[in-house]
Each structure stands twice: as structure tokens, then as C-alpha cells.
Image (cartoon, rainbow, N blue to C red; front, side, top):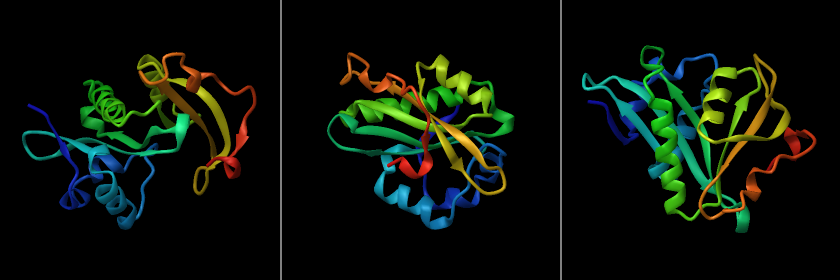
Length: 173
């Protein structure tokens, strides 16, 4: 039986099987700690009965007024545990958490080349809101899609109306 539980400090020493994926951004120790301390309800792991981390989701709540939203900072599933519905389960958890915080929508950024993830998010009700030019930099420079899904506080789904033009990463708040 898979257990969904809050991420804790010890998990940082056990999640390489999930985190070391070409499409998963990796961050410094302090970045993970910041999320764990400030947004613990948004930082969850799926744990196998043998103690191995199968997947994790890391997010936060941010914005103001009608831009108050949940944000998925990272979602990653270990290669051995893909196609089991874990990503959808973790996204549903984050959406419910955002719903409880009265968010208008949930958003996430995804590499434009990550077609598997993009299709998953579309199946979960997300749309491409905008393309962000030059969002990912480093070894693999690439644009990102900002994908969004409205929650019950946005019944007209205004947050999901796509922009007609791309934006540059320097213009993203």
C-alpha cells in the first residue's frame, strides 16, 4: 500500500531515484528546506511499503486577488513507478490543498519538449496558458509552457484563457 505523507528532511537523502531524471529540475538543499518549512502541506511524497520514495510533489500558494493560486514547483515519479497513476494522484492532492486555501487556479511550468507530461496535464484538465521564452537555462536551454487549471473559485475559468503571444522569462512574476 502506497503512503502519501509530508516530505521530511531525511527524504532529501533518499529521493535520488525520483529526482535524478532529465526532466526534473534539481535544486540546492536550502531550496527544498524553504518549501518544507513554508509550504509543508504542498510538499508530499508517495512512499512504497519498503520505504523507497516513489514520487514527490512540491508546491506553494502565492499571488494576490484573482491571481491567488497554487503552484506546482516540481512533480516527479521514479522510473520504476511510472504509469501507476501516481502523478495524477499527487496533482489531485495539490489541487485539493489549493482548493482548501481558496485558490482560483493551479499552475505549473513544464518544458515544451516534455510531451508525456504535457499530455498528462491536459488529461487532468490543464491548458497551455502561455509559452515562456527562455525559461529553462543551463545545460538544456528551453522554453516552458505555463499550464493552468481553474478551481471552483473561478467558475468562468478566466485563469485558463490562453494568451495570444509568448512572454519572455524576465517578464514572468
